[in-house]
Structures are given as C-alpha cells and as structure tokens.
Length: 285
Image 1 (cartoon, helix red, strand yellow):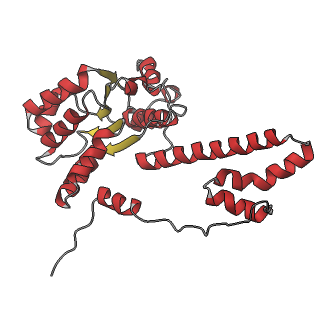
Image 2 (cartoon, one colour):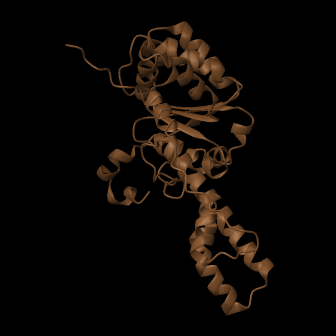
Image 3 (cartoon, rainbow, N blue to C red):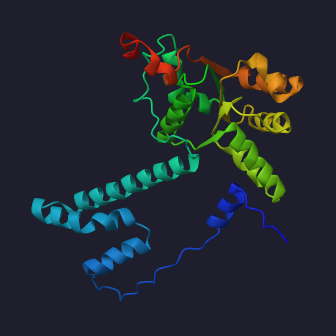
C-alpha cells in the first residue's frame, strides 16, 4: 500500500500562489455616458481600487455635506486607497512571518523585570538599521528570560518599516528544509529562506536536533552572511553549541559569521516562568 507523503510548507505555498483569481466582467460604456453609483463601485473594484470602492458612498455624502472641492474629494479617496493597501501589506507580511506569538511587542515587554538588559540595543535593533547593513543578532539567556518575546517584537517592529520577516523555531526550520529536500523543492526553499531580509531562528538548543542540523544551519548562515540579517535565540551558551550539534568545526564557522557583524544581547538572569514564585515585592519587577 502506497503512503502519500505530506507536502512541505514551501510546496503548499507554491501551489496556493498558482491559483488564478476569477476576473470580473469588463464594463464597456459608450463615450460620454455617466456611471451610476453601483457601476462606479464595480468599476473601481475591477481596477483593483477596493479602498476607494469601500468608502465611495461615504465620501460622496461627505462631499455634499461639506461642499468639498472635486480635488479634495479625489485626495480623500486616494488617501483611503493608499491606507488600505498599506494595511493589507502589513497584514500579509505578519501572516507570512508566521510568528508563534503574534501579540508579542515591545510595548508589552517589561524591561524592569531584568533591569540589566541592554534596552538601548533592543530599541536600536527595532529601528531596522541592522537589516539595512546586513548585520546579525544573537540573543542568549536562560529559558523564560524574554528572548523569544523580544525577537518576535523586533520582527513586528521592522515589518512596520517595510521589511519582510520569517520566524522559525529551530526544529521547525530544519523539518521544513528536510521536507523540501524530499519533495524536490529544496532549491526553492533555500532561496526563500536565504533572501528574506530578516530570518529569526528561535529556541536553538531547546530540542534535540537531527544529525544533519550542523550542516543545514551552516549552509543557511553562509548563504545569508553579509547578504541578509539573521537573528538567533538560544538558552545554551555558545560553548555548548559544538556538543549540541556534534560538529565543532561547523559551529565555529557559523559563530564566526554570526558575530562578525553581529549584536549580542544577554537576557536574564531571572525567568518569567518563575516570576509567580517570587516574593510579592519582587513580582512587581
């Protein structure tokens, strides 16, 4: 009995993007004929100006009520369209990033809990300037010290500035590459992972990794080196990475590239997961 292999995430994305949209029927009118509101709305959507179409009736009523000049009305409609497109782009990029905790932001991170953390570095990374310079970042600290929260919060911040971001837990990233290798889309998968402006590799060292982990991670880091930015979080000190991956030479080469133009953030020492066990005075942070 044959077992059908589950398609990789990358091949599924390729299939999804290959679907064609249904086209609306063309609107053909004689020269000089005026459109009514329904026809105008349909024409705007046919021209893919959905932002204008969504508020057209409201803006027309506003124009009548406020005696708006035609240019002011057109300006409002164009602004509505641009706002809608910007909002949709942000929504697409947040969805594309696949954050584990999409509500993690800098606004809801308590810097007072670990007061020695270099918050200046965090906000500097959130500006996205390190991405423009193709620099990397490494967040180290014990479990529960806020590494994943900050990594995702920085990802959210740079999306607002127009950058594309991929978020992957280390074991999921390696599984994605392995699946793409099996179904013949490895080249396309690595190209996608290599070219995204910011790749966040979270929880390195949290789970046992496959024997090919060192080779796969090194290839990815080498491809991205000085071409795109990589942010790695780990609860293991870098001295343990050689033992963790079983390849000291590969780890040395990987760290050499990550830290050459890299920013190191030390998180901790206290853990959020043990916060509830602290004395009441300390829980307030």
